[in-house]
Structure formats: structure tokens, C-alpha cells
Amino acid sequence: MACDVDELDINPFFRALQNKFSDLYNRAQEKCYTICIPQTTSILGTDINKDFAETHILKPSPYFQGQLLTLTSHGNHSKTVTLANDGCSISTGEGFPSKVIARIVNEELAYNKEYDQYRVLILDQPLDPKFQPQTSEDDSSKHKLPEQCVSAKECKKFLQSVPEFAKVLERVEDQLKLFNSNYMVLPDYLMEAASRLADISAEAVEGCLKAAGRTYAADFKWRDTVVAALESYVMSAVHDKVFGVVVQQHKAEDESLELKCQRQLRGINVEALGIQHRFACPLPNAELELSRMDWLTTPREKLFCLKAVMDAVTSEITAHLSRNIPPHLALTADKPCLTSDDLIPILVNVIGQSECEHLHSDIIYMETFAWASCAKDLDDLSYCLVTFKAAVQYIQATDFSKLAHKHRKQVSLDKLSSATDRLSIYNGSVMGDNSPSPRISPTPFSPTTSTTTPTSATASGTDRLGRQMSRVSKALKEPPQGHGKDEQKVKSIFGAEYDVPVALEAASKSNAGPDLGDFLSSLQDDFVSYGKQN
Image 1 (cartoon, rainbow, N blue to C red):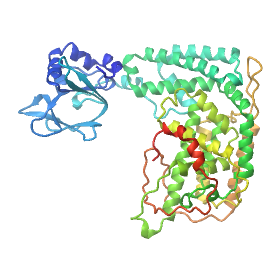
Image 2 (cartoon, rainbow, N blue to C red):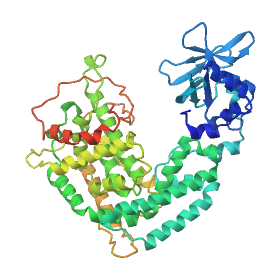
Image 3 (cartoon, rainbow, N blue to C red):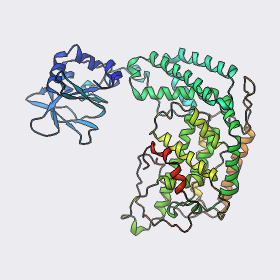
Image 4 (cartoon, rainbow, N blue to C red):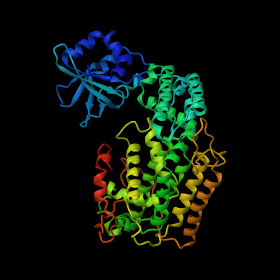
């Protein structure tokens, strides 16, 4: 049948159905009953007995449509189970000691000997709490997933926390030392270098999953975390060698983008870029989030930085709208929605005001070396990457010199102070408490020899931070505008809704900047395969 073969091959309950409880399995197939298979990781250590098997084989209820009955009986009453209308979950009812709502991870159709269909549901947990695995504290924390695994430091800590990975990591270290000492990375052959590093990572993933055991390897979330962590582990070790070549190859594009931002976009009236009046507001948090890019080393860190910029834009615009909504419209206004047409000019403004010297090279770096972090075309990180790429291409293809330059709108004191604190917190957490300086060098590395020595960027990083802080200090000297007392938390544009209803004003077309229509049309193919924008 067409179920997830990897899961069913190692699932102890499914194997027990085929062997120990073959009579129940044959009966379920013959009657076309629904078979529920809890995921392997949710029943490790559970006693798979006949009661367990009968509880997870469901037959249609003769009384209520959409209700199912287990093959077991509780007193004189059968246990009832209800399938959600959306088909995404299944909940227990009468006869069970407590209500359980199990998420349906996968649903497949199988066929019996008569070619009649029956359903197989892969659940994230058993239907009865008494079947929850009883594991010791040591076993439960043996392969515990970290709360966050984004930075190179966090990924390395997670990998080193699993004792079974020790020998695999030693072998990876030897391969990376050999790569840094002997492999020559050439500008025109970045894909070959990426393929070489991807092979090292893939070999390490295979070794780690094998060392951890098939049961843990079947946990998709845990496996994906291992894959992403190993990518960061590999790329952090070769960053100085690889990224320097990327910067050298795209030096002209970086300089052109930075020059256009300084001369044409810095200080420009945001509405002149085509940003709707209701969305036109200062975005200091988003600008400082993007300015952090130069301190990051791995593609995964940089991708999450782009997402953090998107989230900061959403949060600041939401706060701006909530402060400016007329009181008499607060309960009747519709909720705003940032579309790609709105988001690209907003990101153009953020890029123009931020201090990010290698943004074009960063995008190439992420596209080329993020083989695990961007594996799915429809995930949030891929959407952030393609949207930023579109904004950068729009800046490079557009002449903004004819737009009237005006002073930027004043920024509230609280926002600037909060943004400055966030940058300080970042310097102490992601870079490490003892990190002396940023690692990105503004001067290209030389790939002419087999080894590449990283150049210190302390002075350059300090200058960029100084320029950013001087801009903040200048804004602080100006009288702040009024703002609401309650600041909203950062919310993601991916699936999150605004809590404050906002009036939808008619978009003003009189101050529209360069036409985005033709440009977006030319990028249509880039956006088709990426998720919807909330």
C-alpha cells in the first residue's frame, strides 16, 4: 500500500498487527475498518497488547454519522471516537478515561484482497492516555530537541549533546580541516564547492541517524533538526574561506547596491516609493535587524535574519496602525493585510536605510549553500529569501534619483531605545559573550592560494555600528512623536493575525513612486511556488 513505508517498517504497532495480531488485522482489512497507527516515537516503551490493538481499530458507528467505535467495550458501552470535519484530527469520547485530540500526521488509502479501500491514519499519539510510553528521565532527555537551534553556536551545542554523535563529528572535523587547508574555492566554481560541502554534510547526517537508531531517525522533526544543525556546523567551519570568495565575485553588485542606497534611498520619503499611506511609518527595528546580517556566518542564521526583518516590519506597522486608528472605527474596521505589492517597496525602504554592506553576496551565499535550511519550496524561509531577492533586484533595476528627497519621519524614543537594546542583546548572545568583533571582512579574501587566511574586520564592524548609532543619536535629539502606551509583541507574517482592527483607507495614488506592476510581472515565476502571504 501507499503509506509512509519508512514509518510503517519500523512502527512496533504495525509490525505487531501483521504478526502477533494478524487475526485483528485481517478482520479490519476484510471489513474495511479504519486503522490508526500512532507514530513510533509516541509509543516507544509502550506494551503493545490486544487492548492497544483493538482500541486503534475503528468501525463506523450505526447511530451517528462521522462517529467511529473501537473494537473494545467499556462495560456495556463501546468507546466512541469522532473524526474532525476538516480531517486533520481525531478525538476520543464516551468510554475513554479522558478526552484526547490526536493530530492526523498522514492519511492513506489501502486495499484488501478484494481491492476494496480502507483508511490508514498515522497519528501523533495514542488514543488512550494509558498507552503513553513510560520512560525514565534519562531516556526522555537522551535525544531531547533544543528549544531553538538557529545560530551556529546553538547547532554545535545540540550536536555535541548527543553522545552517539561524537565519532561522526570527529570525522567531520577532519574532513573540514582538509577542505580548509587543501581545497581551492574559485569564484566561477561555487557550485562545485557547495556540492563538496553538501556531500560532507549528507555523510554526517547518515552517520548520526544510524548512530541514534532507527526509532529516533523516524521522528521527522528530530531528523530535520539534525540535518539543519549539521549544515550550520559545516558552514560555520568554512565560512571565512567560502564567503570571502562570494564577496569577491559579487563585489561590483555589492558596491553598486550600497552606493544607490546611500545616494538615492537614504532619507527618501517612503510614500515616494509607492508605499501606501497607511503603511508609511518608521521601521527602526527592521533596519537594525537587517544590519545584523554582516555579523552572521551560516546560511541558516542569515535566512532567519531575513525572517526576523519581516516579523519586525509586521510588528511595527501593526503598532503604527493601532495608534492611528480613529476611535469610532476601532470596532468596525477591517484588518490590514500586507501583500507582496506592499511588502517589496517596504523592504526597499528598509534596505535603503540599513547598514548592510554585502546584501547581494549574502543572497547568493544563502541560495548556493543552504541545501538543508531551504529544502522545501513552500516554507517561510524560502518565501523570505525570494521576497528579499526581488526587492534587491528592484533596487538595482530602478533609478530613484528623480524622486524628491525629504527628511525621514521622526521616530519615537521608545522604539529607537528598544531597537538599540535588541542590537546589544544580539552582540552578546548570537556572537557570544566573549566575541571580540564581527567576523565579516569588507575586503575580499584572496582565493589564489590553496589556503585562505581570514582578515579581521574589527575596525570596519565598529565603523558600521558607529554610523548606525550616530543615526540613532541624531534621531533621539529630535522631539519624539506621540505613541501608544502599549507596544505589541513581534508577530510573524506567517500565519499570525493582527489583534487590533484597523480602518482600510483608500490607497493614495498621487505620490506613487516607480511602477511595480511590470517588475512584479517579470518575477511572477519566482513567486508561483512560494506560499501564500498572510
